[in-house]
Image (cartoon, rainbow, N blue to C red):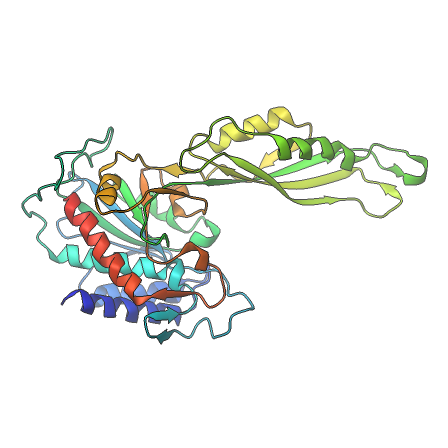
Amino acid sequence: MNINDYTCEAVALLSELIATPSVSREERKAADLLEARLRQWGLSPQREGNNVWCFSNGFSAEHPVVLLNAHIDTVRPVASWNRDPFAPSLEGDVLYGLGANDCGGGLVSLLQAFRILNQETTRRPPLTPPRGGELSTPNSKLSTLHSPLSLIFLASCEEEVSGADGIARVLPLLPRVDVAIVGEPTGMQPAVAEKGLMVIDMTARGKSGHAARGEGVNALYQMLDDLCWIRDYRFERVSDFLGPTVMQATVIQAGTQHNVVPDLCQAVIDVRTNELYSNEEVFDIIRRHVRSEVKARSFRLSSSSISTDHPLVRRCIELGKQPFGSPTLSDQALMPFPSLKMGPGNSARSHSADEFIRVSEIRDAIETYLALIRFAK
């Protein structure tokens, strides 16, 4: 088979996945489909819930381990679709359908690259780097660009909701991973950093009273100073790729009727952290500066980053790619190892009506993944 054949197979599989609704937490049929196709292609998939993965031939933890990851779940279709979101439609170079861009294109491209690499000998002679020799990475087995690699392909679920039964359920079952390539849509440019997310519930308490007599303690006014601080505070550490950590008040609730001074005011604060702060550290800064009660819903969705000196990033640059920072969250937030987000498509198409991926983008992605991973061997 040549690259055209693999591209055609990728598009056919993606079309089947589009036609198999897989909204987050409802991915069973899509996982069944993918598992069956992997077996049909001679692979030996493993499964936990609706997560499906397989190992490359000759897998050995003695070699650097690279995880190839993309998700099978989608958001719910918005009302403004002009076509059936679950009816794949191939029009020239464009394939329409829910999940085509986010992140079906990356899923099938990584899978085809995995299949091609899996068919190649696992003990091939080292490739000669075109410029320079070994590239060192501290504290990682992936310290040269020509070491034999062991690969894991993982199709995870519940990514769109950061669910507990998604990749977080699988990672404890996998051997050590040295680095991951995540197939989210980036135009095949390497996202070397990604913002984290922390949602905070903030509560101010007062005392109710009659509004006409000015009685009580107005919880809304108690909250007001804290909201002004949220609006105006600037975190000191600014990332080269992600910029500053930012906060936004996005929801506020107070009061029961016009003539009663509210005794309770509640707000929701959306916090997007850069890689220079942990979620816990940001939470502590907020807690120390506001009078209201604050509670983080979770600290688990951390910012992620990978050094620009990492061999995979250096190889991306050799291929003419431009590293950047991504504002959108992915399963990288749950990975306790370096990860690189890089996939076909455009993030601006994600979660939008009439979502699509280009066939040419899938072909280019397969070729780029091969150029990246083969060279890293």
